[in-house]
Amino acid sequence: MDPVVSRVRPSDASELKKIRLAALLDSPFAFGSTHEAEVQRTDQDWQVRAERSSAGSDSVTFLAWRDRTPIGITGGYRPEHSPEAVELVSMWAAPSTRRSGVGRLLVQAVIDWAIDTGSSSVGLWVTRGNEPAQRLYQSIGFRVTGEHQPLPSDPCKDEVRMVLVLDAR
Ligand SMILES: CC(C)(COP(=O)(O)OP(=O)(O)OC[C@H]1O[C@@H](n2cnc3c(N)ncnc32)[C@H](O)[C@@H]1OP(=O)(O)O)[C@@H](O)C(=O)NCCC(=O)NCCS
Image 1: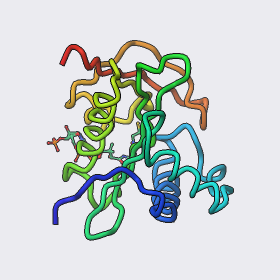
Image 2: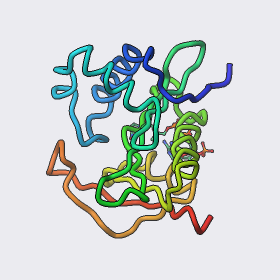
Image 3: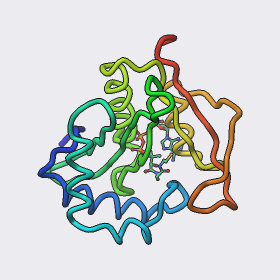
């Protein structure tokens, strides 16, 4: 069955918790946050997170599903200092599904949401050396800007900035 991507619903809070914690355990090098930090969140916190990102144009979470099982996640938000520029975060596809197009579907969902909500660009940080992710973003049109910063969850590592300008597409 083909994967389906949909915006998280308030009723998906427990699936959201499960897949986000699985992502943090599987790929700690890829994220600014940690499993240790997020496993402390209460079920009420996950409920609030699902509700906040299920509607509106401030933030969004998308889940990829196959046979009613979540197999991927990503999100986007509008930083307060530059609301026209969406940040793509939390991208993860379950290892058993990789190279089958789930990542591309998830990135496209954030791009479509950014366009629908009037954004001019989508930006992200990717850990230096994370070739699968960097190639995924490049294949969709994101370009390296030259900016970099320490990875918040492990400052020994470096994150590289990539941006997709929507006006130029
Ligand atoms: C990065 C990630 C989300 C990609 O997900 P995916 O579902 O495997 O990606 P897709 O199947 O949609 O791949 C789309 C394109 O990305 C590129 N790509 C993806 N994985 C790749 C790999 N291992 N090597 C080289 N290119 C790769 C290819 O161009 C691919 O197109 P192709 O298969 O037609 O050649 C997944 O590897 C992952 O979850 N990694 C761990 C978490 C992570 O790094 N998140 C990113 C945080 S910034």
